[in-house]
Image 1 (cartoon, rainbow, N blue to C red):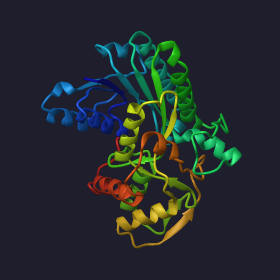
Image 2 (cartoon, helix red, strand yellow):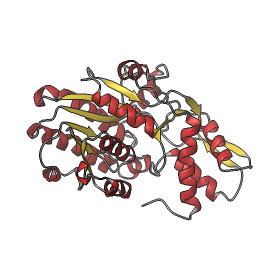
Image 3 (cartoon, helix red, strand yellow):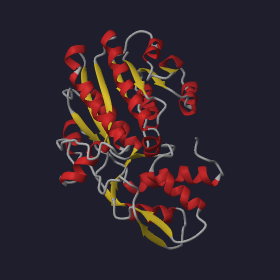
Length: 330
């Protein structure tokens, strides 16, 4: 029976991947720096609790990898520090943690051979190319990556993801494993965290005490993908044959404006007031939409959830959270 390690298994996408892999009858180890009540409850519901092992430690420290016993067939390397606020407040920690996670994983694989590694990267890697060279959108995987302003702290995250892509791809021959890179494209869903646009917008609607409701970056565009579709695409990227050394977009190609998103959320929240266009946050990208034809053709990846349904499911969770008087974790 296949044995799989998911680094970052307590994260939003990670825990959903873990549950899907366990349901496929794999033996799964979820590793992360924090506990995850959702995964713990899922583990308790299993008839064979040995199908899921949960390991909690700081894997930016190399010695933490000694907690793993035996060998793994596959590693999903999803662990990373994410979020705009973290890059602005602690860019040094973003660089340290994400770089260490990459190098510690590779050092572990050097001594503990695996068949395949999947590394999760990001659409943030394209932001500089869009700013400077105006490449065609929807963006394909062939678009070159670049940094537009190395002095801006927001680039620390993208730089660590570019480093991870290069490191995992170029160590395959030396360490004898296959590797696939995926670049996630605005994945959303219930309990996705709080450092993202939709939770922030919902919180503002719940706590609004005056009008108009400001739409920051009203003319910017995004393409949102529901987490269930992203999980399916991620596992396909790992398990399909002939994907060694390939890079795939995992997302959806329905591009909408932030104004369309905000007014739709306002409708879901039963907001009847007025709106006002407002300037965007510093460093935010004007357009973002992936070309997913390569994943469709190679993986038979076909995201099914319409953006309206994905947003509605996401908003419902956060609306209940904020209306219950809860606050995001610090």
